[in-house]
Length: 446
Image (cartoon, rainbow, N blue to C red; front, side):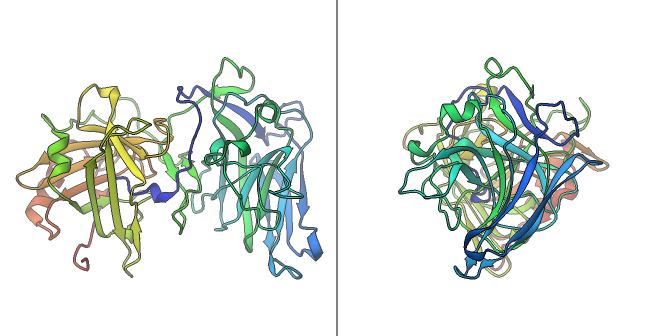
């Protein structure tokens, strides 16, 4: 059950071609001859006596760039200033055939004002006076021992950004006039990491910056094969998308053949599954978009769309969860689904993602497999695709966004221990690690 993917997946308004590879832009491997080695310069807020301070350094041993400091209010403006680290020392490779920028990063300190910018194009006078280049906001992954890939699709960039807050006045996904242009993408000239418009302590470690979703026919230099790591999202308290994480070195897949292929429901009818009312979740695995603190009053409901959407979706998904204090997390009409064409007409294998995004498997969509469905008993068992991670207790899916999750559904909100036990037995018979499942409390719900 994909909730709203924490309501944070960015609009990727790029071609629907297959994502072929990555183009490396920046690394910190201390190789002066490398075209991906760039000198970053730290710049602190100079506006009206700005007091924000920051530093940029390279950890030569671990080959990472370190951006840290403290963003505080500008005394005259009584609003947060900024710090940034900028590289503008040499020509960058052509990324005009790519779809997004990827930072491989991690942070030890939660901070809500990170942004990345590239290029020097000046927006219109109605946008800003000082701001240059294309900028996008991102949320840094915190609490992970390994570096995570943070993906910023070009559709979330803009050259129309507020001078005072850094916030975009309009985004590429909404207005093509602010999208990165071909000239800039052929040579972005500069890359900057910002902490802007939000007060707080800053600590960000960056292993690399790349472009992804590239057509390798046009990008032959600095290109590596794109991986199939599971996607994960950053969290936000608002309903506005902010970032996509692609799993870095956290969840590691088991060796080939270690997890046996699971079997989905036989003779499955999608209409029967979605037309018999709301599904209440009784047990579920923790994922990025379904943290354990939201294991209250969780439900999912589905309905056929009147017609196939622009991106080919046929089912509207509505997911809901609460925290112990009653705080609601409601996906509303953010998520859609369709039968995954990779498996022919097998309706038990769906692909799920934000309704407004093109379908890039592993980026904007993830698998939703119905392993078992008994309409009469009101029981369903759902997995976020094939489990690939072997544990001492069996196999599991990832814990990010796509290729993640495990659920036991019942039509009745009141918990039926016999049905839950049956669902667990079905999973155990297919080799799943049941230790990932946590109870959902349906008792305080309306």
